[in-house]
Amino acid sequence: MGARKEQTLGAAAAFATVLIWSAVYGGKELLLAHMSPAELVAYQYVLAVPAIALLALLRKERLWLPLRDMAAVWGSGLLGIALFQLAVNVGIQLVGSVPAAIFSGLLPTCALLAAVVLERRRPDGRQLLSVLASTAGILLVTGAAAGGQGSLPGYLILLASNFLWVAFCHLNKRLQETRHISGLTLVFHQSLVTALVLFPASLAGGSDGAAALTQPDVLALLLFLALGNAVLAYLLLNFALQRLDVVLCNIIFNFVPVVTIVLNALLFGQGVALGQLLGAGLIVSSVLIPAKRPG
Image (tube, rainbow, N blue to C red; front, top):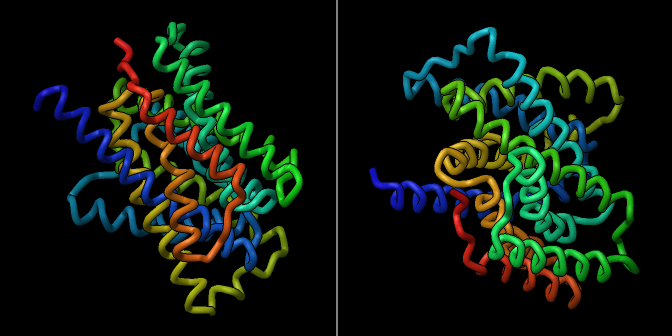
């Protein structure tokens, strides 16, 4: 298969991930009214682990992982799933789902900084222009929310989650390329360690979120997050990372804010401030700036 076709498939997987994540933000905000941030992550991955195991069984794929790779894979799971998802959930509680989704527009900036520091890469002009546009959009969003539900701690937590995510992307790309671990095996073990750590921790927290699982709408939404976000989105991400540069992948993810605004308005009846719309427009414009794939 040609390189151009591989890149096209990678971009399609990244855009499919965008659609899933855009629906996830509003769903998380609704579920966080019934359970703690840690419980929400724990329940998702307790449901996700058997689903991934079933998928592996149907595909006749072994999920065995060499002991030498266990620390790196489980460590990346704690970093990019457990801590990242927990931080996003706390951020949504503090600032709301739409500002949290729009704030994810800083991902390309974080990814570019990580590429400069970790890979000693010199960014090209297109990437710099794209990052500047997304950063300006973020400043508009945070300014629009400053007088409302936004909070500085919430935005700082979301900023930290962006860096956690970028580190996770780099780790997953390296694990697939250098240790030849399949995307499905990665997702299984990373989900497993998340469930093993956060499920007992959420029980020890004393919250009564489990009682809400008796409500059909809550359970249905949780199943969507478990199967759509925890399983399918991460599989699509790994597929995209095998074919695209980490910076380019995260530039594509800048479509999340606008799609989230549209879906939240259609599905959950949520409004949005003018400043947030303008900021989202700048963020999306950063995606449309041609991004040259680094050599």
